[in-house]
Image (cartoon, rainbow, N blue to C red):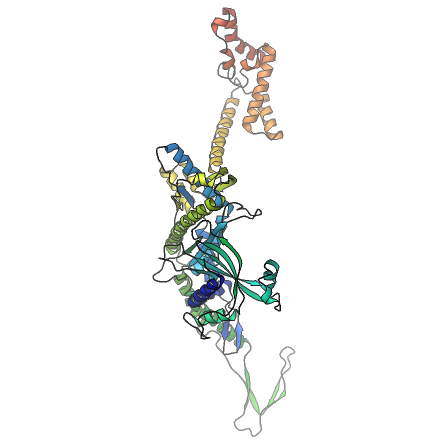
Length: 614
């Protein structure tokens, strides 16, 4: 296990090596946040950019589209001669996994991680056990996305191998925070202000989970990072500050808990909007110069010029006041005004830079509520957007699917290591699974963690899924139940399936009632229809409940006249086809005389006629 000083030294070295990469991230962060300042050396001032921030629009749009569809898990049934048992266990694993995602609010996490992926080309996450009873993820694995700017992970074996051996998460805390939580570690800062800052490192590997405070001067690390990789401005290889453990726990999972997701590139990870920084600064500078030229065009410069043959120096005798119409008087000279072209070629340059940014970063004009002038149909516009963003979305979906598989394996190890024999229950609401699940980690995951994570439509968003599933249903290659499970708008496909069937049966029942009500000889008389309408309108009951209630009332009314059990009466049904059929055959001919048999066969029709006559 590493000691506190080794962890601090490791962080110092990684921070120094990644100086240029993190400077790139900071530039993109400032670009998206609108914190870039345009220096204007001509007038010795600084202006805020006054042009469209395409990077912010692109990051937000791409991240929201990537996270608009929910991934789902499919566990492989390990069949060792008990196929049904293996299938049920795989189904339970899926429900448990979906329950973890729902409790961790994975939909929102993917939106945040998507922004980091497109802006920084990285999206690390830490999976650890949660013991906080106030948390939604109590007694289960907790996903914690970490800012790539504060993450210093060990080198990965390849760009598509997202599990790392160890990682350091650097945070800045105040001395007051340190004194309130770890008084012993704050003793070296007895003379410091509560607002002074301290570097706190969280180190995670397969052996330990540690929290380390660096009690030395922070400026050493900042200067080393500013100078870049390999720089050592102080001529020393190690930091001079003291590092102490604040907390230290063994990693019971015996497995790294950090998954460092990143994009795919040639040799090093590059964000999608890195190249926009220079173009954005140039565009903002041109816009600032254009505004400056327009301002000078409005407030023209005036010069007092001496006459060539005048021996006296020119002077202004009376200053003009255009607001009151007062004329000015000049002696020995004339007023010359300079005409400044406020346009130059800045507007054309601004437009060209905006187009270059859209092409470079793949930000269609449609995302801003506009449309290109050569777009004539909705289909053509959709094709352009699809050609621009779908390949990138497809790749990000595949990356997140592979990363989530690694994250699920870590979560399973965490669940078994810390809560292996605990019987737990929680609610599941994710990708078609809805309801309560009860399980014991060591029992459910005893036969392995083989599974796959898939997106319903890689490269598409929620709008594309609706269109694709609708077309698949129309072509007869997909069931409506499967389409409901893939559609993120359907939270509970089982309940929606039942609701759709109930609605169609209710519609059929209403059509049948209306059809039978057209016939004067039919079972539905105006008083019955009025009673059904009254129950539905006043008692707020469903149509089928109102029909059943009126059926019982009609049977009781008919039975009172015929002095026969109510179950033997037709009620609202046609004689011989309704509820009285069960009562007519509850006894056998051997148990009654011929007279009673004939009476049971004829009495319903007589009773019905008597009831209607009444």
